[in-house]
Amino acid sequence: MNIKVCVGSSCHLKGSYDVIQALKDLLKKYDVEDVVELQASFCLGHCAKGVNVLTDGIAPEKAEKTATTLADGTLLLHNVTKDNAEEVFVKEIYPLIEL
Ligand code: FES
Image (cartoon, rainbow, N blue to C red; front, side, top):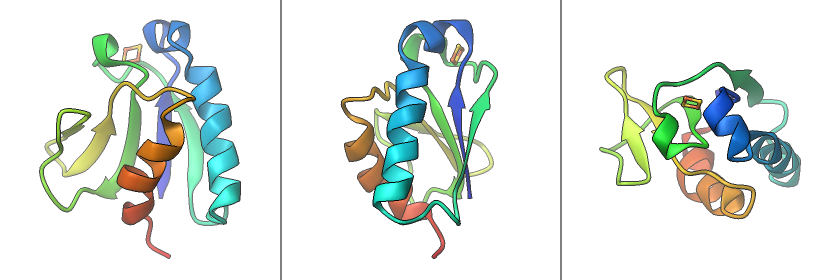
C-alpha cells in the first residue's frame, strides 16, 4: 500500500513535513513499515483542505467530511496534522492495509 502526503506549497505551509514525520513514526509503532510505502506528492488538488494524504487502499464505504472517496475508490484524507495523525491513521488508514 502507498500513502502519499501532499507537499505542495499550501500543504507544506500547513505542516506536511510534520505529518510525514508523524506517519513515519506510526508506521513503525504499528509495525507496518514493510507493507506501507510513504511518499511525498505534488499538489493533490484540494489545497483548502490540506494537509491532504492520499491512500491507494480502496475505501469500504463513502468517506465522511474528513475525506473524499475518489472516483477510483481510493481515499483522500483532509486536514491531517501532526496532532491528529494517529487518530486518522488508526481510523482511516490502518483498516485499509492488507496484512
Ligand atoms: S498543495 Fe496540497 S492539495 Fe494543493
